[in-house]
Length: 145
Image 1: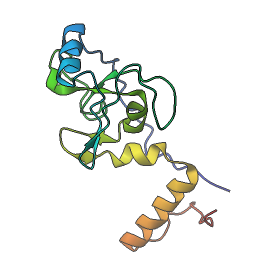
Image 2: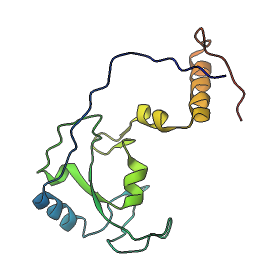
Image 3: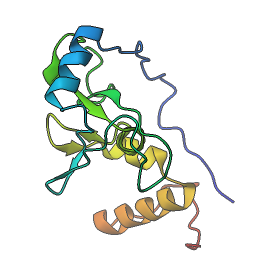
């Protein structure tokens, strides 16, 4: 049996949907040479609108992505092309709010929130061992599985 401990009853702030201006999006596409700008280990994705995604199949559609996650800064300038990047759908989904390209830091809270219950449990057990602490009252240990 699992138990969820709500850390706070305070609601998180919600953010308005952020949209890049059409003029800025055109400048981002030109800078990106109409290709996905996702970069990992020095390699850039480079897929174009209309390409077939070699990993997941389907037709590639480039979408505007704010480099700094909404959770970190909800006031991104919709007219500043340096705050935006062109991403294919696959990399847009992969990124979510996990990575802040401006600071180079991972948003570990978002990563853990998106993880399965089993993975959250493994993270929790790791952190308990790391900090040498026991589980709080009411939280039971479960076997990995």
